[in-house]
Length: 453
Image (cartoon, rainbow, N blue to C red; front, side, top):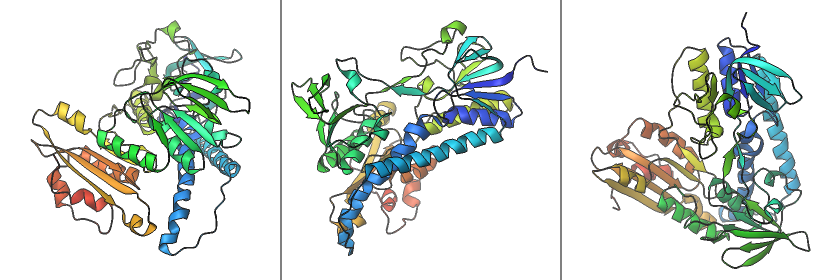
C-alpha cells in the first residue's frame, strides 16, 4: 500500500486541474481535488462561457435592427437583464454539475475547501483536515487586479459584472485587453453607454496593428467612446448611487458603474509555497519548466497560475500532458507555439501566428503582406456599415504563412480551422491552390493575389 493518502492532490478545480485529475485517475492514480469556490473555475463560472453567452445575447440588438433589410417586420424588442442573468446562471450551474459528475465518475475525491501546502507531501484544508500525496498539482488560476488608487474598492471587476442587479445607464470600463474590449462591446449593445479608458496608445496590445485599428474604428462607429493615453486617478461615490470618476486627463465623469479590467494576478497567495520552496517569479506566477514542474520536488503547476498563455485550452492541454507524462508513462509537452486566439468583441477577432511587426522582427528575408477589407454579403441588404478585414503575413523566403488575422463575423471559427493549416506549415501557394467556397467570406483567404506591401 502507498505511504500517501493520494497519488495526486490537485489544488484548484478549473479546466486545467479537472483535466489533470481525470486523466491521472484514468491511469489508475488515486486522486483528490480541492476547490474553494465552484467546480469549473474561471472559464466556466465567471469567464469565457458566461461571457460568450452575454456576447451572443448582445448581438441580437444588431440582428433585430438589420432584419428589416431582408423583409422582416420586427416589433420593438425588449431586453430583460434579469432574465439573461438567470439563464446564464442555469447554464453554468448545469456545467458545474457536469464537471463534478465527471470527477465522480473518474473516482476523484472532491473537497469544497481552500487548500494550502504545509509540507513536501502534505496538504491542509480549511478547518484543519490534512492529507498526504505523492504528487501535488497547483491549478489555482488567476484573479482580477484593482488599481492602487483612492476609491478602488468602489469599482467592480469581471467577477461581479455578470451578476449586477441591474444594468447602469452609463459605465466606464478601464483597460484595453480582451476583457475590457469584450465587455465594452457587449454592454453597449445591451443598452449601456460605455466609455473605454486605456492608458496605452491603442487597445489590444500584442495584436496586429491593423487588427487593432480596424476594431477601434468599429467600436467607435458603434457608439463606444475610447479615451487613450488616459487612466484612473480617483473614484468616489456620488449622491445618487453612482460613481464620480477623476481621470488623469483632467476630466471628471459621473457614471452609473465603473469596471476595471486592467489585468489579472496568479492566485498564489496563502498556498504555502514558501514552505516547500516553490519559486514565484516577478509577475507573481509560479515558475515552471516545459513539463510544468516547479522548483520544488513533487510539485507541478498548470494554467493561469503559471502565467504562460492564459487561455483555457492551454491550461487543459498542460494538465493533460502532466497527467499522461507522470501517471501514464506517455511523455509529451503542451506546445505553446501557434496558439489560435479570439477576442469576442463585435466585430470579433480571430487570429493565429505572428503579427506583421513580429514577423518582420523574426524574418531576416522579409515578409509579404496580403490583406483585404470588404462589405459582407449580409451587410449589402441589412444596410449596416459592418466590414470584414483579413490579413495574411507570409515569409518572403519560404512562402510559409506566418500569421492570419481576421476581424468580422465568424472570425473565431475561421481562425480555429486556419490554425491547422498554419500549424502544418502551409504556404501561400497552398492557400492559392485551394478552391474557394462561394459565396462565403472565408473564400477571400484563398483568392488574395496582390500583396499590399
